[in-house]
Length: 174
Image 1 (cartoon, rainbow, N blue to C red):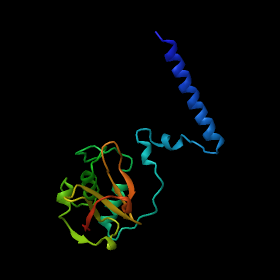
Image 2 (image 1 turned 135 degrees about the vertical axis):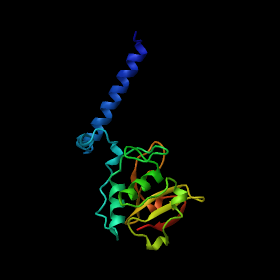
Image 3 (image 1 turned 90 degrees about the horizontal axis):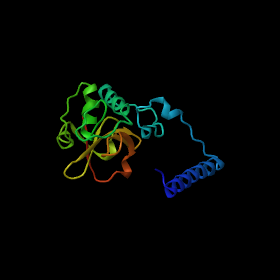
Image 4 (image 1 turned 120 degrees about the vertical axis):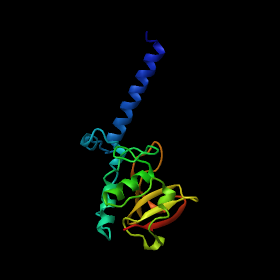
């Protein structure tokens, strides 16, 4: 049984939605369903602005970068190691496994592997770590950006390193 107040609330919500769409359309904003149709199983957050072509300094780093970038839009799940979902260290582990390099599934443990790299000397493929003690990791992709699996409720995505809190250091594996 639908009450009059429920029916009125639904109509009001529907009218508000139509008014908002009309206002946005009048402002010249166009919504296209095509990106969402490209892969109905992928979250739409994966469809962020395209990232310029990435050229890593070694073949292994290139494979790791390409593999990590291919995971954009997949959900963050604690202890996720792919291929359908990832946590931060699961993403880096998965990316470097594709390049033939075995990593532990722990950002803190990963922060002890490879050679330390100064922030000014970062190259695509370097692992970038955050917090003290280390509690997050991403893959540097160049141009001041990383690809990472940020947190619960989010997806694998590209972020600006300058906007990331708690930079701790970086390591080069390949």
